[in-house]
Image (cartoon, rainbow, N blue to C red):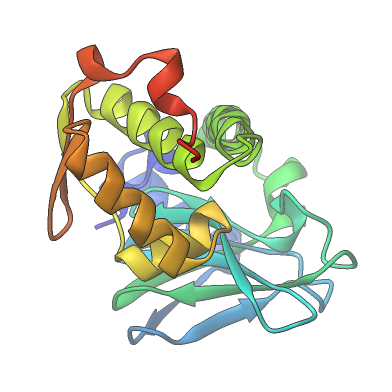
Length: 227
């Protein structure tokens, strides 16, 4: 199961077992919709998703929620790696599906162990690569959120997701309610815009399956039509 985690790329099962013993690591399983951790406790643990899917969720003062990140097997999370300081808002890690998480201490990761394991350096390099990927994801996230209207956010998100899968048809990674939280828009307003996009034959939507027709999308079609 550990092999699916990018953080352990090129690390053998034997090396993995020795490393987890050296790090005094532990594994824990969670049911769906369970709060895994809250970013306000100064925790130095890094969670490695071995199986399942988790959401990083920000709760606003008025109870609204925004999905900051969607993570799956191979991804990592932790307060030390948070993209928004916990002092700014209430941030939780929630299991979207049943998942298995391997925990290691951040200090064990950044400090050279007494045994000077060669694979420790490899692990650090893998973590740096994952952080770089997180930065790319954050850039795309900001591009979506910087769009002025719900329509523009939808088209931007659909275009980025289409490019990610290298296909005009793709499966949404979460429900439409969760998509509204991810885009930080009102769900009812989003559904109205999706209906308009379908009527204008810019997209088709069947449950979670989206087909985007990029040749039909022009600068004017990205703008919200007003009377």
